[in-house]
Image (cartoon, rainbow, N blue to C red):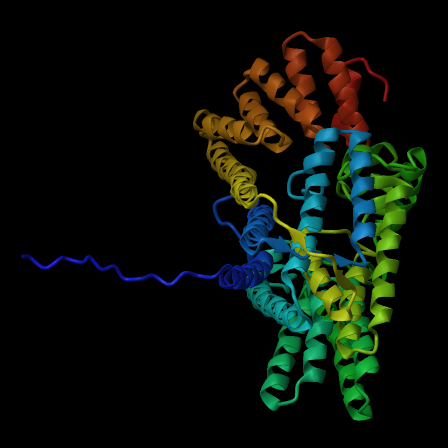
Amino acid sequence: MMPAMVATEAVRPRVAPADRALALAAVQRWFLRAGLFLLPIAYAWNTYDGYVLPKLLLARVLLFGMLALFLLRYAVEGSITLRRSALDLPILAFLASAALSTVLAYNVNVAVFGTYSRYDGLLTSLTYAGLFWLSLQTLDSKAESRALLRVMLASGYAAAVLAIGQSMSDSVQLGALAPAFGTLGQKQALGAFLALLLPLAAWELIAARAWPGRILALNAIVVMGLALVLSFSRSAWVAAAVAVLVVALALYRNPRARIAIIALALLTVVVGGTAILTSGVALQRTDLLQLGDRPVVWSDTLRLIASRPLAGYGPDNFGLVYPSFQSIYLQAPWDKAHEEVLQIAATQGLIGVAAYLWFLLAFARAFWSGHRDAAAWAVLAALAGYEATLLLNFTVPAAAFPFWIFLAGALVTVGGTRETKSIVVRAPRLAMAAAALSAAVCALATVPAYFADVDLRAAVVDDFSGQSAAAMAPAQAAASLAPYESVYATEMGNIAFERNDWQAARLAYKIAADLGTFNPAVYRNLALSDQHLGLFAEGLAAAQRAYQLDRFDPANRALLLDFGGTP
């Protein structure tokens, strides 16, 4: 009789749901940290907008990725505890104001998506709020919050090093000291980001208990301070210096240490001013002592606000309507008020301003509830440094995306959060399906936009090299991938216009005009295309719009007169 053959299998240990949940929580934290580190230094060499668009797309990846991980964790744990904050209602009020102004906007498409390279529409505001809320759900303790803020300091250090290198390289090529902007793409954006970080670096220096920690913090202060000086952002100099002073005076009780930090903050301003005054940079000495055209723009903006005070003209619509209120000739087109409160009032009305002030007061109240913690003063100074730079500037996505993640860490630090009751998962498969849907939406929100800008760059390169026939295909591809973007339609119009294809040029320019643009050349070329096609009434309307967008340009005036219009 044959012995029975018994098949044996290796018994695989089952992973408990609690272990899977802990693993997902760790993935959440590191995914957030990696995204925060990469956001300020993200750059694309093969897109037309190499600075802002990559950060916008990365922010979307981070947003939808965190949402997918949050839903997966929700499904695995079987329940979830939501974290509320003192800023939830003010942020919701601000978003509601943005939504209302979008519905009533001068141009709804611009209000939703924003203008090219600014992207300051409703969708970006929703991205800010989503990053804040999901970051808040990821941070479970003050220790995790401090780790996140240290990651942001590391990112700021990397951005500062890159900005210094860019400034030195440009200075050698130009033969004069060139402003630093690095991967943030604009000196004011770099200044705002560093004004946010320097108080945190000062706090690390004060809180360090050993020399290695002090050396690292001091190194970060010196490098970021140098990058701040080279940015030539005067508002950021003052904001960062004041913010560091707040940290020093609030936390350091040693008189000598206080004097040293105060001297370092003042030295940042003095060295910066000296560097500019003694360099050949193309800035007038009077420009250092004055606000340039800003007072004129602010005065004109007050009249703009008065014309639609409650809901404003819609997010990012400032550039489309400001020329009608512009009182004198200005050297460059102004698509922002260059003052945050006025910008909000112009685009979201007094309702938006009220929500913004509520937001600031709510944070101040949350800070005061935990002001005895030394870290609370550091995050207060950081927020004050960032907000102070906006008093002479405006929100820029390159600096704003990290700021909204910082805001979540700041609230955890000051104790401005509370947990709700656990919510039991009734349909875990539905939660997992929602996580998969989040990943799909992420792909739809990033991939077409990325390749559209790659195609735009290819079209512009071909066009400038005289190969207009080859340029049309990538221009059409860009417009089809991002049909909401006026710049892509404009490029199609430019190529057709150069080839005397008046019908195609008219169609493309008309699409660009409907999508929303404050570029008077679009309307000027549209009017000329209409003229070649014998559409004189339509051409007159386009010439009038070109004149409205820049009535100080003789070309626009001459074109309007050519059509028989009255300036």
